Amino acid sequence: MAVLLDTSILVAEERGSDALEQVSDREGGSAISAITLAEFWKGLERARGATHRKRRQRFYDRVVAGFDVAPVDEEIALETARLWADLERRGSMIPAFDLLIAATALSRGWALATADVRDFGRVAGLELVTLPVE
Image (cartoon, rainbow, N blue to C red):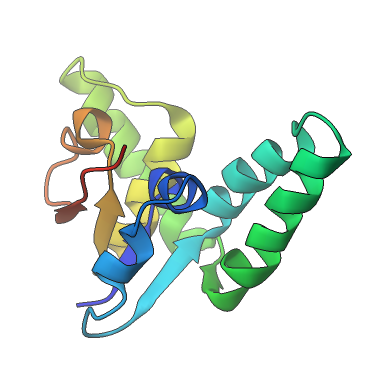
């Protein structure tokens, strides 16, 4: 089963963990959501100082650009609405971007690699590949 990478995995990798290596051998490959791309790019935009920004840009060019990006399409929008209603009904809502990332994984039939079990663990039917990150 392919795996979708949550932003927490990219951040951990940038900070020196081997998170990407832990998921690279998964059958079906790996990808990132367009939402993960936006979250990660926000970190680049917020980088303090030219040196920090250049370091993040190099990481982005090396790692993030090497993944297929799953766009938010009609199927993902409908899955998001279904999840949103379910989580609201249960009083267990998660952040909006996490909702879109979870919907992407579910709509594609992919697992989600993440360090954020607290939020993503609330999503029924979502297979998690949990990675401890520092």
